[in-house]
Image: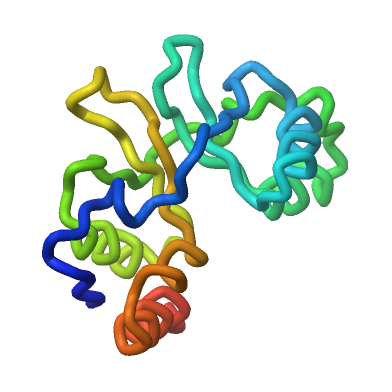
Length: 148
């Protein structure tokens, strides 16, 4: 498990800037366009209450919609809402890495629990690569990309 600096929090590790969500009632076509415009491969899904409901990836759209012959303009992103992993913004960065490693995920939503449980950022593989030591990156990659 990656150790990360003991003084680094999940907020320190995450990507900065505004987090964009696709609404649970928006279509997968809308999600795909937003991914294209933002140059990302995944988006958080937010509900009408502006709370995190799930994550959608470009692969989800292709494999679970297009490959089945469904029209992405007719499928709501909320269909992909459900169990997900997230981390409190104030949690230790090593805890965030542990969640990513244990669940073999490459993107982890960061929630500002103290500020009404609002989504405030994402921790991605590129964040890990930019902010950790070579040894920590190697351990992270071994765990996340290990065969199931």
